[in-house]
Length: 218
Image 1: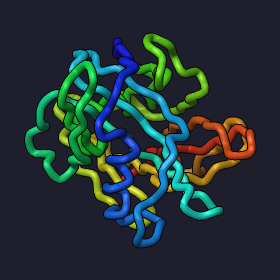
Image 2: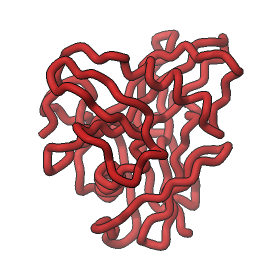
Image 3: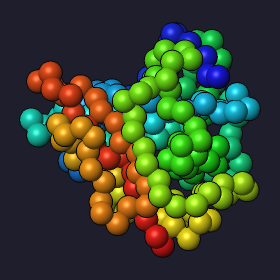
Image 4: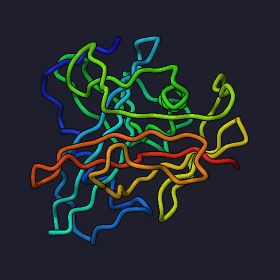
């Protein structure tokens, strides 16, 4: 069970992401630094209790159109060997000390728990409350048991999002730029073998929802 510490982070998560996002091929903003707001998301538990796992939704409020991004993040107490390319930055945590923050799709612990969530073997947890399930997160999967042991993720960023091949002859498509709807639940693509979706509050008080990721045949 992940324990949520309500303490200071220096720099903050959105400050880290404001520096990191403009370098992504799927980033939709201009040359300036984005004005980011933390909009929503959820957490997953690392069974070993070593890695923090957060599926974060942030919105760039620089322009009236507002663009919402999906950023899975993992937090570690030491560098993750071989994942230097996925480092978002480091933060000083008021309780845990220095934390290395990674694009979570480069982290095998996060990817494993994400696949288990889709399969129905892991529980989405509230983003800011300890030991509280997030029942707004919906998931579905229609295939056989997913292979996750010993899996070293190799994500590929593209203009439309991130593709992550899995050991199951499938590809996990991460929808980095979210297309919100007010439908509940939002419908995945017809060719999806599995998906994960959730909601977050919109600027006008509506509850916005989107499919965050889909699993398709390779």
